[in-house]
Each structure stands twice: as structure tokens, then as C-alpha cells.
Image 1: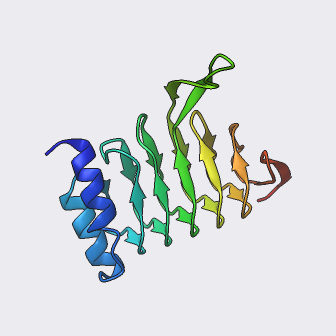
Image 2: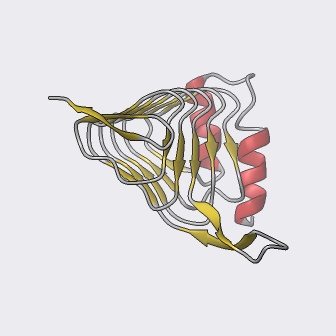
Amino acid sequence: MAGTARGALASSIGGMALWGPRSRRRILSALGVRMARSVRVYPYIKFLGGVDHLVVGERVFLNANVLIGSGAPITIGDGVSIGPSVQLLPTSHEIGPSNARAGSNVSAPIVVGDGSWIGAGVTVLGGVTIGRGAVIAAGAVVSKDCEADSVYGGVPARLIRRIE
């Protein structure tokens, strides 16, 4: 089955509120999402395109309404918590001419380091690495790498403080 078809099934069937977190993880795994057995996935997960680029580590929590893009690898490390309505979007556009500013697609990987916490409504753009143990405040837009063991927030996300 083609990746985009699996992504559509993962969004529609796998994202249904009918299933519990463990059943949802089993359904998504059967459709090709690479995730550890200990992952908890809450309802309304959506995939833009295929599921082939996503790898999810151990003890990850994916809250409701998470949106996962395709086009480049997305790696979520062990022990990560992802809040509701988070968007992981590895694909954007080059700036085109004035008659069509959204030019050609460009994609770059996203890496979320072990133990990180991504708050509600965060958007993570392509080419970003979030360091181990980082905290991303609710509503932030992450367009640049984030250091390990640090708190980031705002639009665009900026370093707020370092934590132990």
C-alpha cells in the first residue's frame, strides 16, 4: 500500500476517538508508523502525506490532535511528551516570484531529543533539532535548533533559560 494511502488510513482510522491509546498505537504500527510498544497516542492524530518518515521512541506521549508532516524524517526520542495540537512540519516552500510566493517545496528533518517536553499548540518547522531534555513553551514556533536542558518560548522560539 502506498505511503500516502497509509497516511490517510492512519489519520482516519488510527486517529479515531473510538480507540484507546494502546489500541491506536497498534493500529498505527500496522499501517507502517514506526513506534515503540510503550508509546501512548491520543485521538485525532493526523498525517500530511505518508507515515514512512516518522520514528517514535520508547515511553513517548502524543496528546490529542497532533499533526505530523511528511517529506523528511521526523525522529522523536525516548521519554518525549508532546502536548495537544502540536504540529511537526518538515516541509515548507521557497519564496517564489511575486505572482506565486509559495514556491517549490523544501523539506528538512526534525529531531526531538530524549526527554523533551513540547507544550500545547507548538509548531516545529523543518531543519530543527530540539536538544535532549528541552522544554518548548505552549504556542511557540520553533524555526531554529534548541539547546539541551533549556526552556524555549515565543514566536519565533527563543531561549528563556537553561535548566538542570
